[in-house]
Image 1 (cartoon, helix red, strand yellow):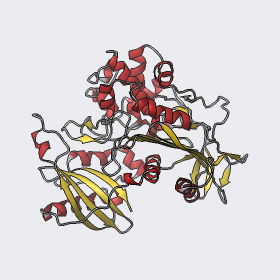
Image 2 (cartoon, rainbow, N blue to C red):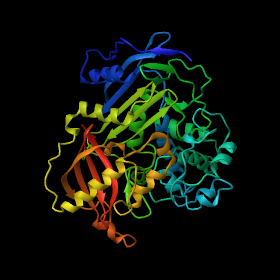
Image 3 (tube, rainbow, N blue to C red):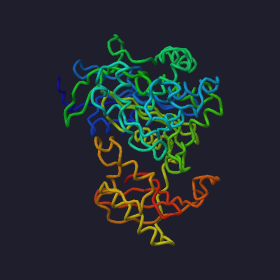
Image 4 (tube, rainbow, N blue to C red):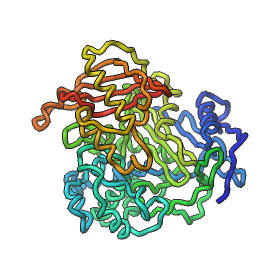
Amino acid sequence: MKLVLLTGLLATGATGAADNIDDYINNLIKTQNVPGVVIEIAKDGKVIKKAAYGMADLEFNVPMKEDDYFEIGSITKQFTAVAICQLMEQGKVSLDDPISKYVDGTPDTWKNIKIHNLLNQNTGLKDYALVPHVGLLDEYDMPTWLTTMKPLPLDFETGTTWAYSNTNYVLLGMVVEKASGQSYTDYLNANVLKKAGLTHTSVLDPDAILPNRAHGYFKNGAQLLRARPSLISTISDGALISTADDMIQWEAALHGGKLVSDASYKMMTSPGALNNGHTRQYGFGTFLTPLGDKPFLGHHGNSSGYSAGSGYFPSDRLSVIVLSNVYAINGQKTVKDLAMLVDPSLKPDPLTVTTDPDPARTDRIKSAFDKLGAGTTDDSLMDLDITATLGQDRVKTFGNPYGMFTGIKKVEFAGEQGSPYPADAAHPDNASCKWLTYKVTTDKAVFDVNAIYTPQNKLAMIYVRAEG
């Protein structure tokens, strides 16, 4: 496998004079060892910035171009969610349908998994990408995939917490096929891509000759490895290839009412509910993690040698697309950073530290943060929403998702709001939850944290707002 050392690469935007966005991307390329990037930004439906930076192919010294093709990875999940919503509108699928209606021979452990659990990513199904022999770079057929996945235990009881798993959207692809009577690719082409007006987006064919395809790379310290092509044994979770122009068009179609009904769009862009009535900031194929108090709708994607990010900021009618030919950059963070450069008003206001009217509460929160930073749980401090996430296989592969809380020096109270959860007969205590804000200082960083605190004095959700 060929090794490439990325040094001295000058990256310039293709739109003329350098600006703060060009400076940001050039710095990203330099500091994160990124071969190339294409961005496109639209406001009020009009493109205001489009640029290519760096190299599409390092071996042949080919500069990146604005119309180059990239794998978009898990952004594909938005397309699959749209397909499911369309089929729901046709009466062919229901959110409460069990997966067993569409997949034969499902095990007893899957009996409580419904379509809404798959869409909202709270099934507890293991992520196939981390399972030997059916990973992202393995080649297999779907019967083999199902035979491998069905016997595996769940990481947690369905609906008890949220955990990202590509498996959910592979199964949704099967739902699309069973409900529509078409292959996933045929349905997508006729009902999603064509309807959205996308002419340069398709299911990836790794063997096809595709002019203007940016070549993908993996990082190896200061060096880069040429990535092996994705084998696309699965499609509906992350196998689309596209361009920046098409992705901006996708944002316009998705958020402009061209693809699904208003009711479906509201479900796609609303937090998914757990069994206890708590919600998580993921809709149908859409991350909902806000930028400060400004709403955000988007997704990131990674595949073999590629990273991507897409985001829409409804308060500004601003869409941002980032495509890169390296695994991996943080696509969602990059999108938000660029949005703040376009409109500084999107940047969250700095927190004002104050005294917690309930000091014992902050003490308990700090104790919970300390234990999570160490990768341990405590049922007396943490709700099942939190503790269940540490039991998943993804943690064993990628490490502690709460590692940012290691080495805490201080936790400072910065505010309190009422419950973000609606009261209902099944979960009356939810209306008494508190939305707390803290400034956390560790030996490595300072960042803001939103936390849900239950009437039982337990931590139920953590959202890191911004790092400094």
